[in-house]
Structures are given as structure tokens and as C-alpha cells.
Length: 69
Image (tube, rainbow, N blue to C red; front, side):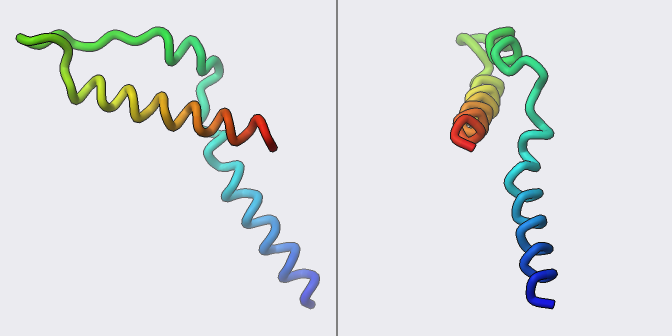
């Protein structure tokens, strides 16, 4: 039964690796380019900008990871 355990482990690993792909938007370029930030008294809302940068950085990392897969 070692082959069964190895196959199950490999399947679980592949699911873990590919899971983030299910969360990618249909058109990541349009999603990243079409953004508006709420205005505050002294410019843009920093929390909104930080959240956008984090989301976009994650998207770029995921796209780069799939590029080499």
C-alpha cells in the first residue's frame, strides 16, 4: 500500500499548489488596471491603496508561479 499513500500525498500536494488558481479573476490585467480609490482629506485612502497593492502583488506572484508550471 505504499503506492496508494504516495499517490494520495501527491494528489493532496497538487490540490494545495493549484488551489490559488481558482481565485484568479477571469481577466487579471483588467481587474488590476480598473481601480478607483476613495478620496480623503489629504489624498487617497491609505488603507484602500495598501489593500490594492497587497492584492495586486499576490496576483502577480500567482501568475508568475503558473508561468513556470
